[in-house]
Image 1 (cartoon, one colour):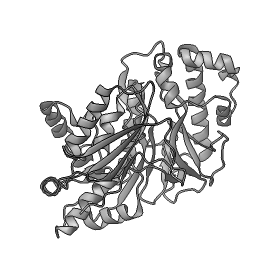
Image 2 (spheres, one colour):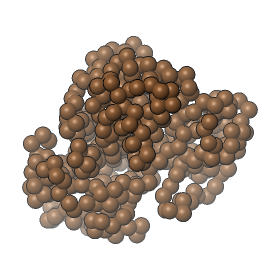
Image 3 (tube, rainbow, N blue to C red):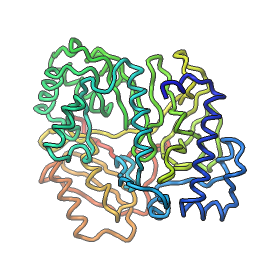
Length: 420
């Protein structure tokens, strides 16, 4: 990947086509779902001539994966690991990843990290909220963090006391890089500024942000407080490490592993410069193929060549990812994912939207398969109250569907409460 990033567009497309042919032939031979799909649609991997031929294959989405999880596994796959989506989409998803894909995604991440002059083993502060990371046994996490020189700070709770502690830990560690949600890092930065704490003298070289849309004011706040550039990353557990920003500002797609299509609401392929849904084919996923996977995110492809000299194609813009903070009755500010994780793994729930109407009332809109039992509802309410406050009213409304915003974007956590 260190070498291939400098190839031109033509050479990269040839590499993509070669890997795509292999993936599709493997899927036809070893993956029951795709063997059946290709037979029903008449698609023949042997006849594929260009990447545009992908359009002959129907899309893959979360509902298809939920229904056909076992059939999407390769019959010759070994040692698959079970993964969950991060949860901010409101649609819980379970899928499987093999070692090849893990190695490719990790390689892509660290190549992008090196663009900014930092590398594996450089001290790092991670502000994150996934239970996968946060619930690891303490002794295992301590060993891992020492080996990787990483310190993990939980993004769920953002009380003033916690924020003071975060600033102290950042100052004590003096990391070379920060990594986390843009909303969380900008919130910590704003707290430092409000407290009059100078964080520019710590030697932080870059702040990497991902999992949410990065807003201009967040970038400015992080840059101003920590005195470092902000590098935006785009990807997910399910879709992979899709794109990352270089120091010259180009949002480069990991073209060696990822094919990105932009499609209209009716599934028609759109040209660069046109806004539509981001559809991803991950070329290192033969164990559990992600072929024409609908991410639910909105973006625009860019045809320009970046001044950094890399031939990797670029995304011009990524739209439609945002998770709000929530405020508990006692004033504690927490990441919206603190509530999302309560809902995301419940198999009865297809989609949801959380609206914090006030400090005393939160409404949860839920689309369920066969209706929620009273026991599940009470469990949800108890989980929400444990975070928002024991006297908060939690109103659960079961609905047939959850509509998009007027802009066409979806927001799954909305807080109408203005933090003090």
